[in-house]
Length: 149
Image (cartoon, rainbow, N blue to C red; front, side):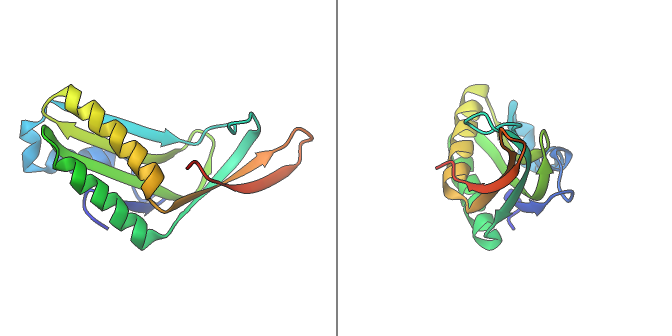
């Protein structure tokens, strides 16, 4: 796993860890903005079904590689100082954190654009998979793998 990006088992990495990594870097003294995206478990599906839990899995070696690549490429953009992308793995309840994306830059304009690009790219490029466990209209439990692509 790269320092700026990777997948982590639930409970081994927090939002505080992200901020600590950012603030410890020498380049942080050039920062004027930190923008963050925290992905959480949504309590209903796109078609309104109740979500009970989700399970997140990944092809870990490839996911680490892809997230590190995105982080590195975006950090190379003008005005961007650091990009952190950390996805959690395991079983999650509604409302729990799933992913942390942080972009550090000199100014907010560059930071917001890079944050949006980082989120869109990790969602489409990283081999991370979500299984939703839902309760249907009749109260029956069911599960299915979700593709957001």
